[in-house]
Image 1 (cartoon, rainbow, N blue to C red):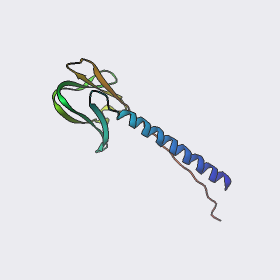
Image 2: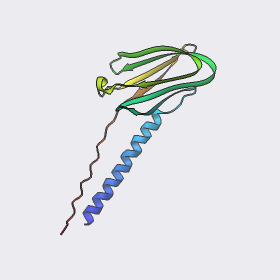
Image 3: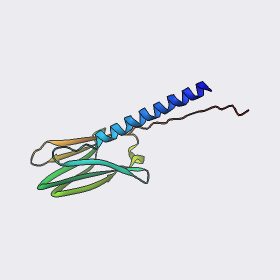
Image 4: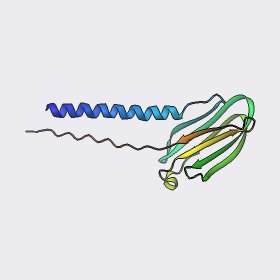
Length: 134
């Protein structure tokens, strides 16, 4: 009985640790930068991840948005302009598979790109408990 409780505690600690690491990675992916651009993971739609790119500023800016896979293939490219920009992107993971994706947003005035890297980590946690019934 002690080993079952001990194994359950270890599994609980492992679960908490893995969830902490997952949410820490998600928080770092949702950071804002000084330029006012923000890329957030907002959830899944039909089992496909959806991201929201936004810019809310007082100065009108022009940006080039390029989405690339890890092999540097351009998946999406667009030029946007305005003081308030909002775009949603749904990645088709059936076509992409487990390929990492980068969002590169370049300010036309500054010329310096802001790059967000998107990678997917899957974890499976399984608890097995054996109890003596009689």
